[in-house]
Length: 235
Image (cartoon, rainbow, N blue to C red; front, side):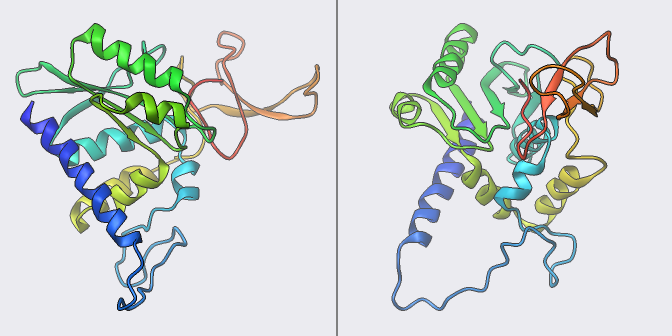
């Protein structure tokens, strides 16, 4: 339990440091920062993560990035499974295999509402774990943030995850950068079949002529995902 608590404490410290950095300092010398999302010319192989880059990751790769970040922070973390996850995407265990915390990931660009946070809190009670973590490529509604107050719920939004990743050491940073960009990291994975989807064109209906992501195992699998800037796990 001390391990997950120290990890969460580290994230909280990162939050406090970010607040200090955002405060105006009349005597500070402006820093030159690259927000392009490209590789730093003076630090080859290291990516400066940005919101567009994070949101370009398909839902499965995003989950893998979240798991890898926790592992880099010495947590024993693993994705649950492909398919219906029962409100849990990641399980964090101790060295003996006992469950310490549960996490949920949502690669969305719309705000995360309070219902999803309540759901995670319910899972925590059902699994009898002390900590819950919610990670999203979006942000949280006011009522979601209010509900999490006073509970062992850590809400990590798009901006905070970017900050946490960009603040990793060079060795850790290269590892997570490589994981993020290896192979096809933008085409979504079918949540049922665990294979990359393919672009299809609707032939009938109100969306006739429009493109969407369809499973390559159609008609056996009819799972689809809208084509948009942010790819999420569920329709």
